[in-house]
Image (tube, rainbow, N blue to C red; front, top):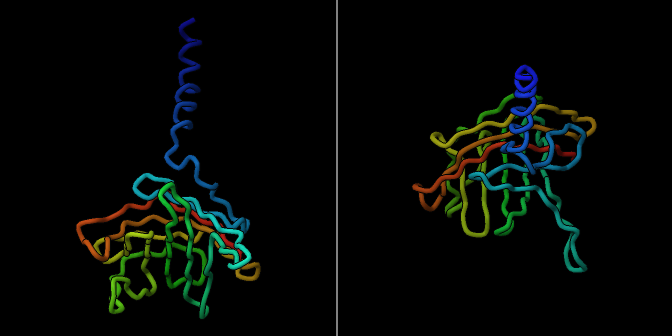
Length: 181
């Protein structure tokens, strides 16, 4: 009888691990052009959402961007949270699938919001604006690129600092996107 209990132990442990997955509730990491995305910001779920628009406004896509000038990749993700809308924007010098670091300090454009270049990230909501720099770094992994079909998919993670208060920082984990231009 004891051997039966020991045989069931691995199954019970596997079942317990799956229930508490830290990325549970985020869209799956796909590569089909599903126009989905999401991440955890300091453990809080951010899911890419668009709007259908109204009579007075155009629809707003959940994801935007793509490849520009054949070597710059930009992805913008509009996320819905319990506290409102937030935006995550990734910038990289990318032509193909691969790993791209976020580790550049960018110059300020005369105000609170800096100018961006390859190798940087911004995160903003209605109250705060965060950026990566030489100390607050991360990476994007483009796992799939089909430029003919306009599909790009990948994962990302980073830490970023508040541009107005350098004592405040955020940690973004389990980021993923599947975008069709």
